[in-house]
Image 1 (cartoon, rainbow, N blue to C red):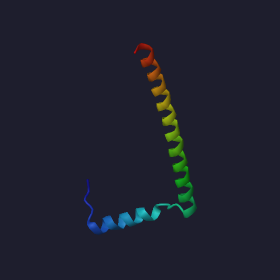
Image 2 (tube, rainbow, N blue to C red):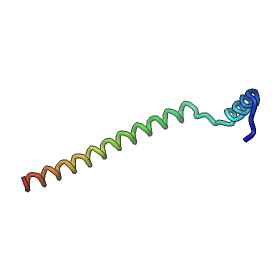
Image 3 (cartoon, helix red, strand yellow):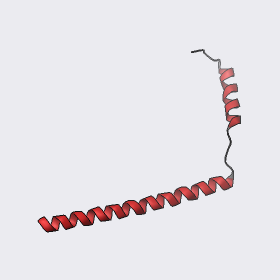
Image 4 (cartoon, rainbow, N blue to C red):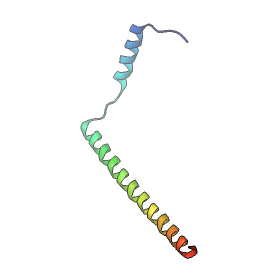
Length: 65
């Protein structure tokens, strides 16, 4: 692999960073809200699954215990 001197490396990094498309304030806010909604939905889903498993296990243990 060819070695690059530090000056060339910094120039290449600056060129790559210039190509990045940064999100605007509205996009960041919208994405944040979407993530929070999905996290809330996932937590409700796993709570319901946990409740169902716990209820089923309790019922089975009551039958045999």
